[in-house]
Length: 445
Ligand code: GDP
Image 1 (cartoon, rainbow, N blue to C red):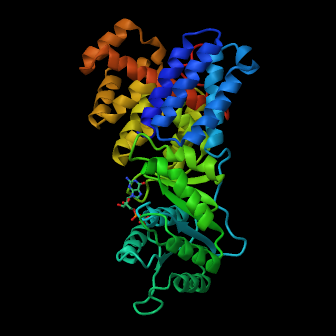
Image 2 (cartoon, protein in one colour; image 1 turned 180 degrees about the horizontal axis):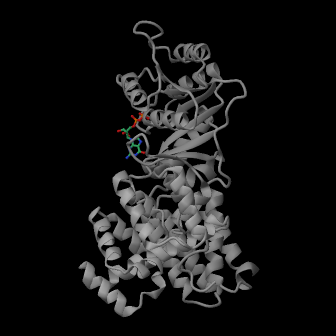
Image 3 (cartoon, rainbow, N blue to C red; image 1 turned 60 degrees about the vertical axis):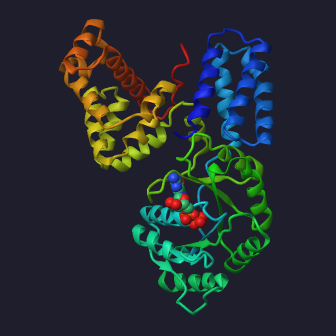
């Protein structure tokens, strides 16, 4: 899972902290040391780790923690705020030109995922009501043009590529021609895919800088593979010096549980992370929100993204009905079941459940999650009486035992389901009312 190890490590650290009342300087030091180790293991760059833990330490020793009713929770809040900070702070959205077309140029090493991203970005823009066009200005890699044509077709977006023999080998000319074409055909966004090399080299930078100069893009997105590890900082700096960019896209965030590049690049370059790519499919892509990512890392649950996905998955009317149920506290296990069944068809259940707050155990369960889990959940809910489904509060020990027997599951499984449901319903209720969700599992607030 995304930042799985880091999340687990931090969760362990905070659990230890929670058993204490007042925090002594030694407690703070111990915590900071553990956070430091967890970040380094996640491949976050040393300079970023030093800075980050320095600020945590200073704040944790200060008055805001000393005077807090719940010092441990205060520390988590500080870590959350600082994490949002190193991820870039505010969400940064794409900026569109006043006079279309908006030109977006992609730059990055070969294999970073630029071409795939071009497809994802164009599909997403289309879904947002834009009319994008893709431009094949990677004329180095033999297959690049064809590959872009394939993703363009999948995304249902036109691709501008050089005619054989015409402009071939000159990416600057291709990019310029593409913009003329976009003007002619009234496309409102132009995404320029450029060539990458396996390593940073002067020739590559010169070409990218040349394209930048020729097309004067509104956005230059630096695409970086989050698995690149400790090289992230050096690569990002090289691109910043050579081409410069307005934003960062992290790819392959699905691939590894480390992904330290994510936590290094924004703070080192001062450029915001704008999108995250989380798989090979064209839909495995999302705008990046520093606050939501921090919540995911700290396991506070990414309820907002969950709601957005739910809105995409279910029709509008149903989404409104669900929101209404959350707000009025009438969301029941029956509704829960109905939603799970719909999700089963979407195949995205794992992703969605991963965004619920739930701690380490939940994530471990998720990693071995299969669809038969839904069947078990269904069996548990079906073994409940109507009253129990609508008011899980009445579920005492003997009822839980009866349900476990009836569904061929265990009381532990019944408990887990009920807890998960209650926690989700509680957070959803807060969000539906326009509030900020409380941190789950942090004891009495
Ligand atoms: P480019 O050389 O920068 O254009 O990189 P490509 O778009 O060709 O991507 C290189 C490889 O990474 C391809 O096999 C892609 O399918 C894969 N890839 C791209 N983005 C992601 C991602 O977010 N997750 C995963 N797992 N694979 C990705």
